[in-house]
Image: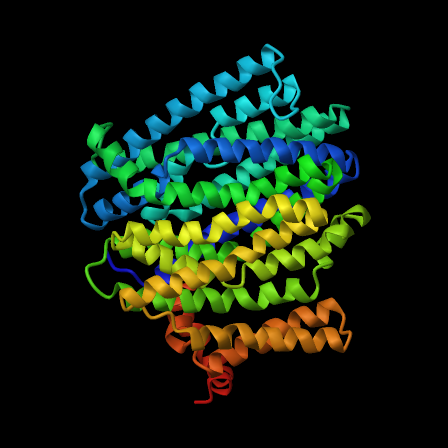
Length: 500
């Protein structure tokens, strides 16, 4: 299986389209919902979602990541029988654990036994969401399969379908007067539909490849062994993220929890495309024999170049998206800025983690994960107690520099080049431009265009985004024939940008 930047980027583009559309309709959803329900209800819903995410992460044992690695290995070698084994075995195991845990929460709710001050109805919704696979449940094995075979357009369509259903169902119930119930039922329906869709494509594709239903204990053991090293850091990472939400809920209040949740949602949109590129490169690099370091360095450089201008726009103009949500969410602007700063180093860190995972250096995966998440767990109680939701955002972002130090130490041992000078250029360019725009009090629409255009042109001139990058991405997105028709019309522009 050939790994190319174009193929990875095309797959990442579909993943990002799914995320963007999902978040767009989520944005519309929250704009409309926020006009009807209170911030307290949003905070209550966010608390349930956070607990669901933490529960699922504890149950999955890192299986989705391990499955993605072994499915990528099997698919790269055309071993469709093993591909089928890895999919069915791990999907069924995760469904069984989700079902049992979800039923436990539902029984607690029926018995009116409270957990973390959640009422009976909240526990029942938590149980249903756990069963239906929301927040990284059994549907993630299907997502891993789609990423492995680069059928990410199916993931995007599934996300779009479930997002539209959430919008329609929730609004109908909220307008009917069922405010909290309406919000949660929308999530329940969306989770069920998405999980079913993520099951259908792998089943159909495996049949077309001549592989029927098969399971084996060894396939489960393989994925648990490979995934468990990422399991602890992933748990700590999710705890580091969602304990921020739960900590604000416990120490401050529901309204502030809603603000922090909105800020996390906004920043996740920004990093989605960059992280999608890196995520898709992982199963493909696992199937490569040589050239892994060179290819990963190229993918990291390109993903960082795509992400940084947008990130620095949010840092310079953090009020833009909260302003569109409504006046009561303007208070989350500073949270957006702080959380965006925390993501600046993520391409370097995530790229290294995926590389060492692909070459079986599981201890490095664990070390880097722990270096980033333990500081958050230590800082959250202190910072939230002192500074509320702003303290939660600071604690979240503080972990990135510590994690980078761990990457630097480990990378030197295996001769993995981080190309930090290139990354400093990638970070510095939009940083300088956005700072000047803020000092000159330039409006955000002009600032947005200026930051993106200036950064991408300078990236091209400095070789951060090369002609080969554009060609491969263009061929993947538009096809070679379309590019051949377009090229004569943009040749002079490209020559002007690249200086040749």
